[in-house]
Image (tube, rainbow, N blue to C red; front, top):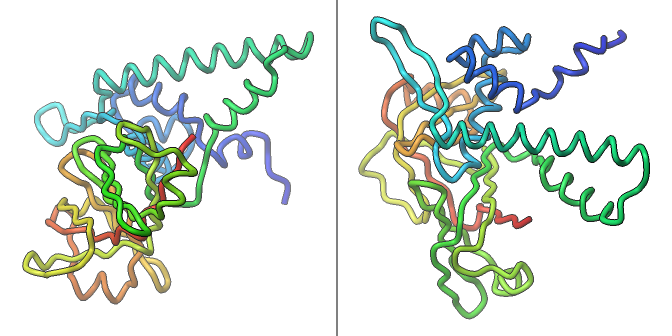
Length: 255
């Protein structure tokens, strides 16, 4: 079956266009309809940006006489304007490239690779290193992800090779299947990361399901659990829950 050009464009959501529509329409669902994508796909794209941002970019309003909605925070507006300016400059670069190859071509292409950086990890957080505790072989690194701290265990060799130090900007990645969700407030665990929040959404598949936990800071954590586990915990949207992550399961990336 041949895929039309319009469908090709929608296999990956344009984040700039999505944020612009959320700002103009005041709703993620309205923006999704305008783009011709599902609400879940649009919501996931916006949440990825929110998690990567040092400060919240979304201001959610639920209920009330005017109904719910989603607006961009002041920081979110700054992010949107920055993305628009970057898109404008990139288009100028492409036009210049059509005329001649600029002297800094390799530098520019490398920057665009960084901007378009993608990963299969469902959890991506942008932040800065706030503390490094070095041991004989490994170092424990605390990353401030904007209201929450994420602890990663990294070998000393990697710390040296990556040039990690306090206030260094990093991205923290965690696979969804490495996250444990629990509703037991009394549970004791060796996991260095424990995040309290409420169940934002959960979806069941044929065998495994996906649970999205919204933290108090506005960040979101996505966990992959078996349908049986979700059923046994009797998860409900809006109910409190906790996400547990081992420090060894956190991957740090620098650009």
